[in-house]
Image (cartoon, rainbow, N blue to C red; front, side):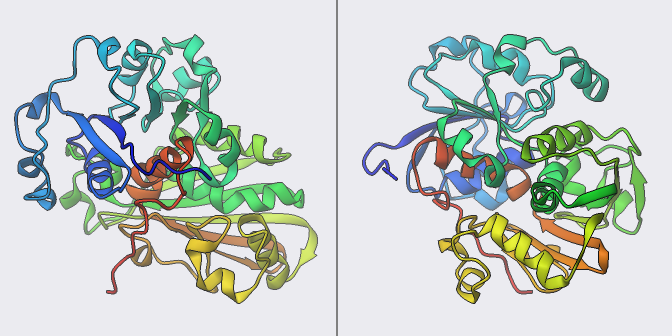
Length: 364
């Protein structure tokens, strides 16, 4: 794989004041192959990045700017990340010069069917022609397409945790019956601006479900699983609010056509994510050298504490004959957003997938 050793990738970040933008800055400021040339946040224009994001105080001299009125002049940018609310990238991305690669962290280009998009996002899709150029950016299942892409629709956080948990079983062709996913997320998934039911003080001593049967990640999950394999199962997806700030934990319940042991199921997952290593202990012990360096197959239940602030997705799979339980955990802001976006950028520019992303969690 050829690497950019001398020339820096010139990066623009649209929407740098939210949690997703903050994580992009945290990662890209230390990425050896990137130079941030523009970071926008209209309401904070003129302020130093470290004044808004206190964790970055003293780390950078960057200041937030108002988004340029004419994006066609941004020819000095190599890649633009869009970390904006749903609906805004639809209007901005078509204005960019064709030489600028795009990674959109919103839901604007994840759904291929504009009627389904309108149903779940309550927005009209206004960039039909551009939609066909977007590649779905779940790195572990779409790696080769991402390498050739100029436009990436970065997956949603719930979609990332869920698809990574289900893809090996879908690919195996052994599924039958209904799939039930019970997914839980921390408060940062609702963004930096507080609302009545998403404000952390409301959530910290509470637990509740939300958006039953209407969550916008449902069609995204179903659409991509149909691309992974023959996916015809009834799919039930429910989301819940966790009283923590970061992390997603997905519990997935499946039925199979064959009787499977725990070892059978583990082999399916190891072979899907680490095919050249099989189930060797070395593959588990040396994540950076594996085929999917950010997927770790763990023995017991994953724990969001061990993936917080990292780009890892920890997965465990368990069998009771024809009944399978799969658990996955990610940091919703890193593997579920900014980290995966940078992982995709690395592939788009011919870099090692792990560049700038060897982020290790803390204990405790």
